[in-house]
Image (cartoon, rainbow, N blue to C red):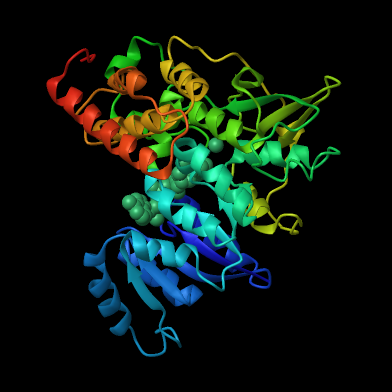
Length: 411
Ligand code: NAD
Ligand code: MG
């Protein structure tokens, strides 16, 4: 039985993690939950899972949550009330909770950085969904992993696919994650991308893309931020950086291939030119389950893959002109140091402005590019945690400033 702490329990990753815990009660027990604002759902989760600790992102939600729990019918109230904590400190308490063996990081954005680091420092295994943490702070996270012996088990479907393919190689142990050292014999990684909401749109039509258009993903059901990232293909760019830190490959050996059916979740090419792929329906429960159950496989009754029914799998090269975010991510990754943190924060801020309908869809890459360009002279090549936090703040502020001035932005 693994005891798990679920960070971001009310989100898309969090709720799917809890569904898995409910489906396999002999394998998993939930001991810690953290959430942002969705108190109604959190109360239901507390009733079902009876965690030992519950952390809220903001202190102001603490008393309303306790009141709701106290007002429950006695038979529905948890037998033992959890400890309630809040703020970043509270999130870190839940992330490093003594009784937890594994922490599922389902917080969205760089807000996941400090809780994830707390989990790593306390030596927990991490099922990593919160890619922004590794992207912004790879140079900080990797040495901490080494120090504590904590392991990053990818829950992102592409990285889970690569991780699963690597299990079949003689260097599985070496690839057991995030040494930052190249895995011998691993020549190339091919990350598959569905193409996102606008894969069938022309570049011209993107000028009129609305929030509703950008948040309707053809294959995956996910949170709003990552759905917009999929529409700009920044998600794939971020995943390139994530793959670099997880598997130690340089950027020239990490490729993106468009695969509209999202059945192959990614591939590895080995030294002898053999290519291994991992397949499954586009359902995040599978990579989450594997990160939770690794190194074991849990038998499920989930729908089995039926290739004859699908008939064909197709592939094509990504369009770099239509999707400039991919190249911005490659460049930031190659520059390294604090640049990926600036890229990530600029993206988070630009996406948030887009979701608030303050900027157009095509302004997102422009704002990110402007922030990265401006940061070139301030780059710190071997950042510490404070550097990452500082440039993250600067980048968000800079993006807001340019967006307000509407300089160089497409209408
Ligand atoms: P989501 O928006 O659905 O959920 C985010 C969760 O984080 C919620 O519980 C929310 O309350 C919490 N949260 C938000 N802001 C917070 C803050 N400032 N402090 C603390 N908690 C906060 O997001 P999601 O789609 O579940 O994505 C979560 C992470 O997983 C992201 O990093 C995303 O890139 C990654 N990921 C998601 C999917 C997916 O299918 N959803 C797939 C691959 C990777
Ligand atoms: Mg992914």
